[in-house]
Image (cartoon, rainbow, N blue to C red; front, side):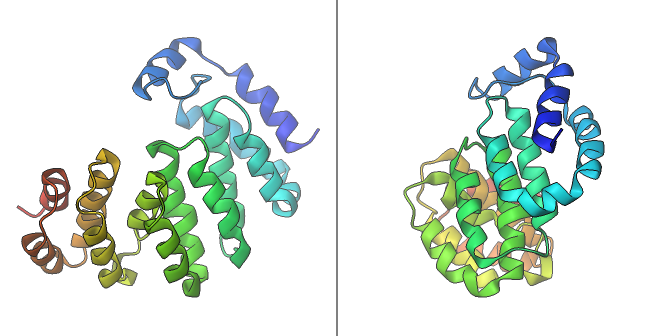
Length: 222
């Protein structure tokens, strides 16, 4: 039995309808859920990954997309996690096509934030020459989730953060009325403030950000 077959048996067998309803409500009823909490899902996933490593290494793209085609959100979480694990240090330039697919399919903050930081961000660490062309595409897209990914991809970069690029992206989207863009700007600035608080305070002081972005950016600095 292959990885997909086993996972499609084991995850539904652990379904908890009592958990599913409040999770569904929290996520604004955008997705169906099996009601499996993250620690329990990871306990199911870990031994399956360990017993199917070769298959996952050789077929990670089709496996990821197959998981993303399933209805329940827990399968999407598994897809992101295995893709992140098995592509790390092995990204090809053309993997941006799969990354864009993941960001723009079944999009919401719970998937996009993980992809932006752990997948797209890692991809660009491995292929830095792709940063400007892909960021231009994402930042100028009409898809809000691609915009958010462009703003958030440097989460965790710390001293490797390209501050000029971060500030330029925040400047570009500072007038956005989208809640998730305003929050992303604040979050990205707050994270960089852990490394360079003076630069962030100076940027916030000089830039007419939306109140939510400003509040999120400086709430640990004042």
